[in-house]
Amino acid sequence: MRNLRILVIDNSITFKDSLVQELNRRLPPGSLVEHASQPVDAQGKLPLFKPTIIVLNFALASAIVNHEKFLPLLVKSAANTPIIAYGILDNSQTTAKRLGATIYLKKPSTGQPMNGFFDTLISNILVIHTQKGAANTDIGAGAIVTKEIWKATKPAPPPTVEKQHAEQRTAAPKIEPFITSTANKNDINLIAIGASTGGTEAITKVLQGLRPPLPGIVIVQHIPPMFSKLFAERLNHESKFTVKEAVSGDVVMPNHIYIAPGGKHMTVKRMGSQYMLECKPGPPVHSVCPSVDVLFDSVAAEAGSRAMGVILTGMGRDGADGLLNMRQQGSHTLGQDAATATVYGMPKAAYEIGAVEKQLPLNSISLAILKLAQ
Image (cartoon, rainbow, N blue to C red; front, side, top):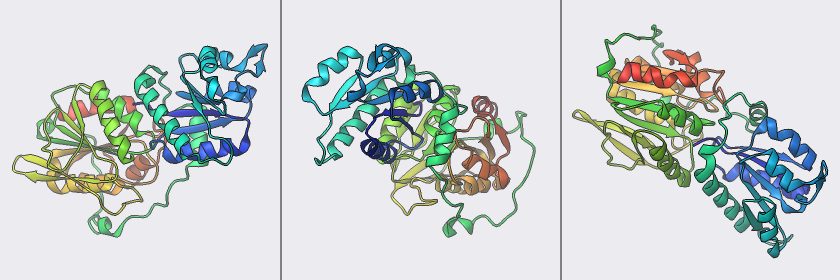
């Protein structure tokens, strides 16, 4: 599932600011929101930001730009990009669709409650993205506006380390060369992956590059509860593996992938030659739940040298200390590099403390996993 990239076009500064704030608050982690006040401004941002969905105040649909109405021109300029239009009139739906809008939503009048409108808008965005997102252009981490907007609007949390995990990590990191021989390939029976900002896209790319047979894969992506199930269902259709949202009691099976449910920490427990998952609410670690550190720490304790850890794009430092813990127990560890990470926060923190055995561009991580674990 590629990251959501929403371009809001509205000449009402007050409502535009409220809408952008609600989108940032309600959309899945890793989503990016840009805005424009005028059609000309929007036209200039299209080739840089490359939105996956456009949200347009229908009052601007008939504005004349280069001798054309703006909405039809927008449809041509942003080919195949769904457009959600909204306006205060009930009878504009037919006109909006005739001009090229995918959906028209009735916006409440000034002073009326807005929560219902925002809920409906978010729901439509997610449905459209699920149905059509795979057809959009693959943007990657190098898009000009993406990284600038993200740095300006999403400050990283302070790099605090929770006391309950810090006690486990007093030893110095083992810095060893990346092992590419066949010596330990068959020893790996569990793969753990962690990601945050930009992670839905990065995880999708990694999984699409993998093929069976592989050990079971457990994944923590910072994501709200209602979106983790949708993410798992999407991956189930887009990869060669069986993917599900994890529940307590799941036994990790080969060629299966388990996504931590939003709002619950996921850990593994070894039972003989198998691993069982536990998913339960708990206090946030690094301000997030699920936490990558919580998963990685449990993998280090239960799987040791028979596991592999992978840390991908994300803000902050969640997962860095847990990955170090895994490496100290003999696990192979991989990290995404700065050039391909949407936000080089989590993998950077892991790399700087010696937790990453090998740092790689995103398109090389699948092959590295296959070489080590298949």
